[in-house]
Image (tube, rainbow, N blue to C red):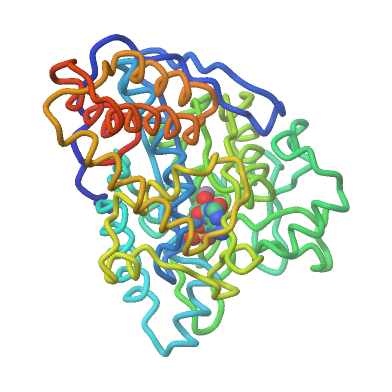
Length: 409
Ligand code: 5CA
Ligand code: ZN
């Protein structure tokens, strides 16, 4: 698949900081030392509905990760998938009387537009589940040969007990895992499984559903977790720096994916940090396509909201926080954007060097975007109150806000 166009990231003078991120697997901060090329995999959308503010918040967090790395003059290898065949997508297509490929293509196109408008950096490899199938089949066959997968009624399951490290991303107990597995695409109650938590690697063809050649596995379609693992291993290899997604992916998706990859390669861990964004809610409930309580990026854009204000709404919340979308959040961001734009519209102002360092430090400290916004706010207040004589300072601020926060002033 093709991704979307990259917005320019201005180079800043001085040097960026090494990034410290909260790692779900170890439960604490990890200082990443990625070498010259940092590697990040971020779980992409299941394209059966438009990008909502929850998605946008999660992608904003991982966009900041890259901006911090780029500021350290590193290259970034960024991979993202599109789950363009899966149960909820097929179910939605049937419910709408829509062709599932047309639905996936339409929503993926809209996602690209939303990401472009929000100045999210595009992945270097943007890969659909369907196009990954030729790489998925041999991995599942290999797991079977290793005795880490088994057949049940034509479907192929992964045996979670084959990975001694299973559960080391979420650290949930078996009861919690079982509940979440049932809620998030698993089938813990299916009779005949070795372990109720075992996830499907390959689903045998079902009547009326799309299917692909699975060689010795028979016709069928891939399971969800192996999709991301196949794509990540193909484009990043083992031991990459960050596996990212929303906190609803820690279990089962990231635990299962890590176990697939660890058994396949015999290496541990799959990623140096498992990083999870908090959930955005609307009217007290997690914004989700299945519940339908959604505020869409595309709708706000159609309503004439400046994408920079949408982005500032996201940045006003720490990425790990669970927060509620309200009209007030957007109104505050619109106001902030106007204040910042006024402050940088003058040729000179208060010195901006310390501000750039404050933004860098805030982001390096587990992506503390609210602290970065507060620092820019202080500079803008000082500009409005007394101004300054530092020629070019507003330009320095503009470039820093663009490069590090993805906001065009
Ligand atoms: N295709 C899979 C990942 S491989 C998937 O979860 N797709 S998704 O469309 O449901 O979600 C895309 C991303 O948005 C995931 O990282 C998910 O954790 C995140 N996300 C979904 N809902 C919210 C929400 N309400 N708040 C924050 N992030 C969310
Ligand atoms: Zn994924």
